[in-house]
Amino acid sequence: MPVDIKRVTPHLSVRLLELSRRTFFDAFAHLNNPADMEVFASKAFTLQSFDQQLANPDSHFFFAMIDGEPSGYIKLNYHNAQTEFQDADGLEVERIYVSKEYQGQQIGKQLIDFAIQTALDAKCTYLWLGVWEHNTGAIRFYQSNGFEAFSNHKFMLGQDEQTDLLMRKELM
Image 1 (cartoon, rainbow, N blue to C red):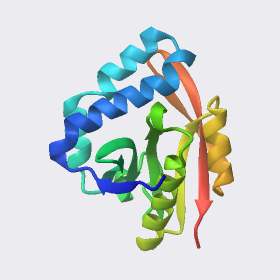
Image 2: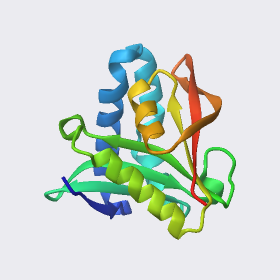
Image 3: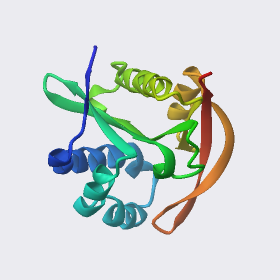
């Protein structure tokens, strides 16, 4: 099912926040301690945080729209907005989520293809992201789209120190 990918503007921050929180909990709540999820969410999923992210000229959110409704989203970071490296040659996919009711419809593939094309248009030589080491479905998805693990970093989910694999796709 083809989606319409639209840039998220600041006036849609509440809608983005709601989608972000819901998709994050759908993806990870069943695999993590509820207290750690809530501690993380109390900081990560606030309107102030989303307003700040949307105001950053080097961070761009995009909705995947189906029939006028967001079915998923992606966040792309350029330059100093990247969570690591801050390399002008790289573009970071900081987040990519699809609502559970739309999974299996190639929406994630369309979002990652959009990220690849966006990186190429920006003359970036690679695209990179972090993915939880236990998210095997996502890791397989990224590998099938040409990403390879090259490092890792720690991620705090509440009090739980987790490991994210860093994956990279060369573009040029």
